[in-house]
Length: 341
Length: 217
Image (cartoon, rainbow over all chains, first blue to last red; front, side):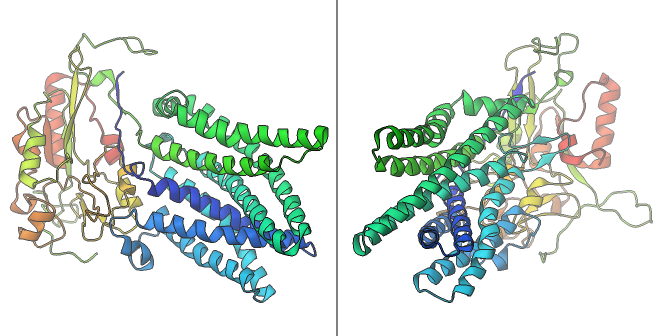
């Protein structure tokens, strides 16, 4: 049975959409981390500093991401004025517009609250909203992609954008890249402040970054497990889903997936963490650069994942022509694997 | 959605309440007759001045050169529950009373969501950057023009010809050499299909109708 596979390219043609998915998820992650650290800080100064650094990281991420998304449109001005133009409230793109439209000002205001030392209650109030909103930033993009129609009979027109697995995958990736970016931000800010206020600030930033690194390990393991489940489920699914799974693991996207995502984003960071622990326990050496490298690798891996998902979205569910439709009566055609001929 | 007055075809027989019923326009592609001549593609591009790189109707072939070679021309199927209409954030795509899924290029922001939602690959975007060309989508209009004054220069420029308002059928179906591409009101199309199946035996099945129209019309 020969399937017709439509390849259609739009979002994968330019950098805009993959970078928005990546930066949006990262910003959502850093905001969630910043808000959680703020709410749980209590008297711990280091958690407060961590929250501050993470809040600062969120701002350039969401600004660049948001601009990238808006200027992908053919009419960017209508993207900026989305409350006027996005009238279909059943479309995930409209819902997402409101989520982004709420998140971007909130994250800027939150960072401003830290920078200008505004009223603490006001800032904590924003943190309370920031936790779910940050998670929503990653979640909604997963729903948006997987809402590319569901056909009765549980077939998706874009087989890779599976609505069971993609939203959670994006959330996990958003958290892991967010924690990594927050950790990186904390290290950099701590180092700069340490230069002026003394060694202790840098030490404390280091301690928090180590905790972030641990959290990252948990996120990476969860992400790896989820990706495995995702691809396993696809490879046991419909023809389109199998093709999508093959495309990612064995086809044109395989180098990007195995080297760009699994190695760079999952395996090597885990290895780096292990090396760092070993270095500390066995050799009492602090391999500081490993922590930096690990965070950067996780972030790059997150970007690679978004590219793979968007490029993989070019594969549409095959249009099946069952042999009963083939015009030659009695002769049929070539034998069909699994169906005889 | 405020549009210019739309001329739609009506069924010949009155509806259940004795009122005039709008026709339900649809395509039927008889895969047992399509010979991949490509006449539909050419006629459409010529009639509608389709932007380069876009094929509002495309012929797809499987088992090329082998027994069981099958060709099908795929236009926009003007689905009853069109996924493109469902996902468009700015409501640029809408259903006409006669079932045609129409596009408003003034409203379209070129986001591309419809391209990923459509199972038939109908929405397409002109080459070149979305930003440069104001990136609006183009697709088969069933030769019904668009939400502009019928036969105006603007309508012709943006959407192509408006044959429906003239009482004609789409260009592709009109020029189909083997009458593989049948267009018209659902009742008439179903009659044609019924006659063909009766004449040559069952084993066809209207390809694409499950996705496009669900069960029935």
